[in-house]
Length: 115
Length: 117
Image (cartoon, rainbow over all chains, first blue to last red; front, side, top):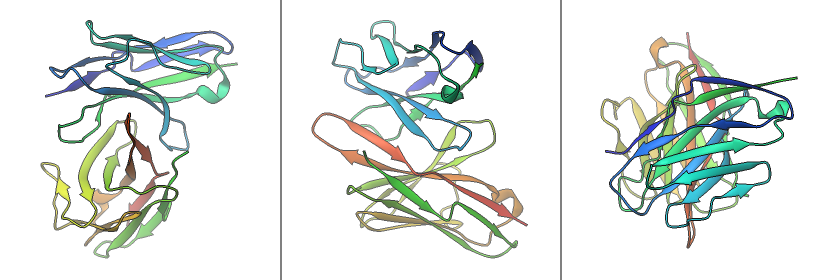
């Protein structure tokens, strides 16, 4: 069974600084997708970034980028120039085609951006 | 981008009554929708997977007779909490899966807060 581990329950960062959120996963599949979702206090789940496992290039979306290490099964999220609006719960998630179609979520990391 | 709506956003009901929550994909067709439950400060817990035109697949431990799911069209799925009790109070979130050639992504609704008195 696939598992996703986020080892940092809480993190904080100063506004304008950079922070990295960790995520590791366990799978025997070779073709899969990884996601980072953000859940702000409004509780709306928002897709931040996604990565296809077959792509070696790390995904980037504006201030958000990932460090995808397939061999190490690691998928960290880097937030540059942190903004107050980045304060949220961040969930790492795993999905693969041909399985049960379920997204497997980590337990989340609560990120607080301080002014 | 893909938008998913949920209605209502907040509902309060009396114990023993039933509550229906709607989940709609507004600008895409969703052959598969998912229903989650989220307790405070916890991750999302998948309750069931709903495929259009067929019976929902429930996760282990989820009572299918209590949480009725209907996916009658490619843009609408409903979750009915039957004979609600205070322990059913929670935040319920739906998601819809958008398929394209290169990726498979779930987009989430804004959630429904259910309070059972």
